[in-house]
Length: 145
Image (cartoon, rainbow, N blue to C red; front, side, top):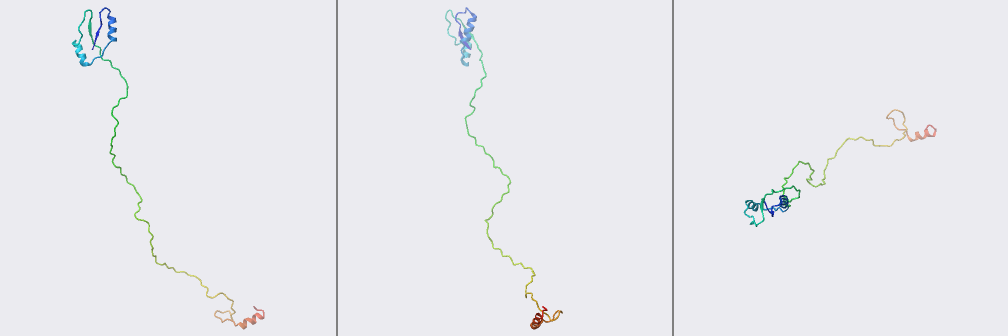
């Protein structure tokens, strides 16, 4: 509610412009008493007063407003488990002496008992005796051998 002293009431349009240009915003408690007329100044000769009510004007503005102060939050994250296969060293590597029993097998081989030689025999039949050295020398001298 605004109280406007509009002076002498001779030009209504002029007074409306004066009311609009000199509007005052009052606190609601003060405005309630002003509506009742309790706080009007005493009238002087030649003045006229009026009670005028101007509704509140609102406008929409966009501004950044602090909603909450910066803070820290502690969040408990539960442990996460999963199955996994791992190679784990149970003991260090060691050297051990392992005794293996001998292994045997049967093997055949030819062994030279007597080297090959030319021997003159008295006949061609098996088991016949060797010819004597004198016999062999006389055959060689006559050109048989």
